[in-house]
Image (tube, rainbow, N blue to C red; front, side, top):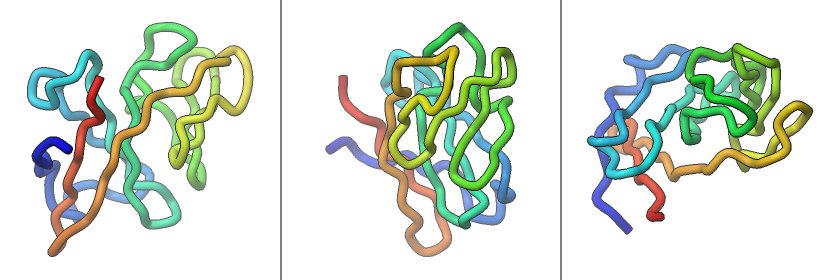
Length: 110
């Protein structure tokens, strides 16, 4: 597993909002959106909607789902599963944990 990236302190990302980690910093093909869901937990997905190029970080978070701001596809923040059309392909997930009040991102390999 890669070394974690410190995204920020818990209070830096209000519930219902997301912070984007640039792909160059993450060492991934896509930027990564770290979401603070309404269940109080943090989740991370590739920032690009799998239906069409749009940043999921600009979407709407409801519970543990995010809705794409362009065509309203929804994704599960826990699994990345596409929950409704027009998206049919899951978004890639990344591990996130909170340690001593800091949000740590572990970008997935590949």
